[in-house]
Image (cartoon, rainbow over all chains, first blue to last red; front, side):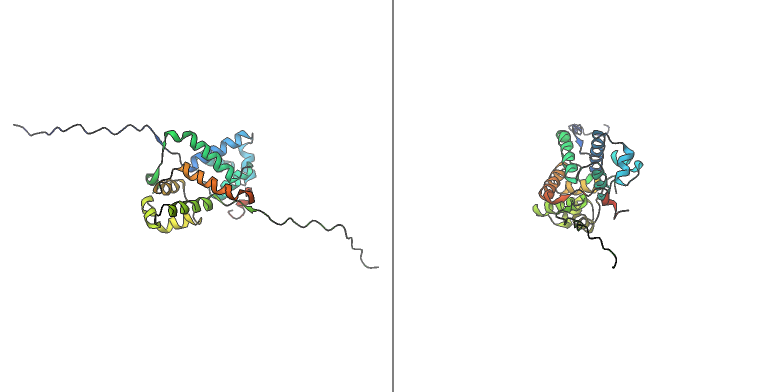
Length: 114
Length: 114
């Protein structure tokens, strides 16, 4: 007789990810700043100048590539005529529209940051 | 005759600052994270451990001294059982309660950052 191979029940396949992790703060706030700028018909260079930052930097913030400091957020929001309250309310609205398919990231969000 | 001193109408004194600038994002989000942690009866060390960061760092984030990256925000929120949507909605509520006395910071927010 050869080796006995124990064939138990097939382990359950991992459930397909029906949901996406929530976007990161810088991603959703960047998209919102870009949407607010475009809605007000302002150019990247003008908004950046009004905020006192470079157009390249603003572009990276809008695309969620750079983490804006709180001072940069205030400066860009102010250049668009938005308060921090306006911004967080818009961001909440954006998140709410995608919340039905989102799961919190939680500590695993740090996996790629550390 | 001595010098003529032209005494026009007294220039209007600058209006007293009845309003405060809006808090910065890291200040209001830090306070909110701390309030959420205390409301759930969690200790700093346990929340920090669950989020994968040091208690010292979490303490500085809660006090608005350190700018948390989006990954840190997600990790701490997740450790408190909050989604990013929960967090931004709470922050909006906190800002709304102080909004009647707030003015946007705008580009001058960068004055101390550059």
